[in-house]
Length: 272
Image (cartoon, rainbow, N blue to C red; front, top):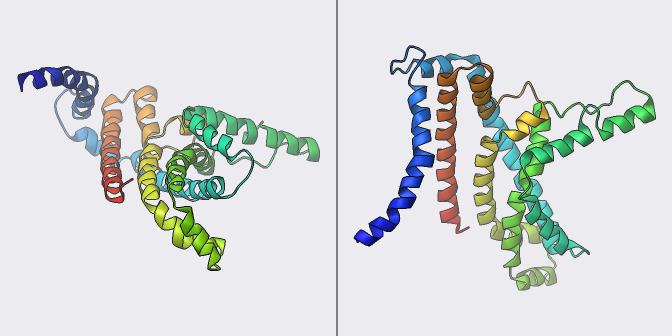
């Protein structure tokens, strides 16, 4: 028993020093306004501000919308790769594994090169039409952030789905096809029920990731799009309002932990 405690002590100490202690400092700072006294006034000030309510609303609708887009697009692309025979399908599946290692800002920069104000699409448009500017000006709007998040997080849905499809009994598909079922019915009645556990777990995880995404919003340059992570950055770096930044960070952590708990419950019940 003593030996087990000794083996467990180092990781527990590291966890407390490098994870729990900084988090406790953030909570402590959120309860200490400029006067130095412990008070809930920073929470009252932040909750009463329009910037916080706007950031909360933007985060609340943007993260689920991006998650829904990732689930729909990821399911469709995984279907094509897994069940539509074409040359290079295995290479595409391998590329998805590599894509998961890319930083989010890299994908955003790629979209800027294509759809930015001076990007390729607008450049081709102005060259052909002679217009002063191109029509693609959406990348600095919420729709641009939504496109970037769907582009980046869709492979996080595809990878588990491809693994789930690889264990699907092809005899069921052949039997359904031999009985005259068409592709949409096979997908709806045979493939989709097998994919639901992976979709539920993937959706919960992607929702947490989208909720805390910072790099994509920052690199798109969407000045009118302020999420909770961006509000933390603005209050801490631009306004030097550290108690307010810590309050927003605590709220963000609470929401993230709650969603992660939902992810664990869904994953356990779905067996994913």
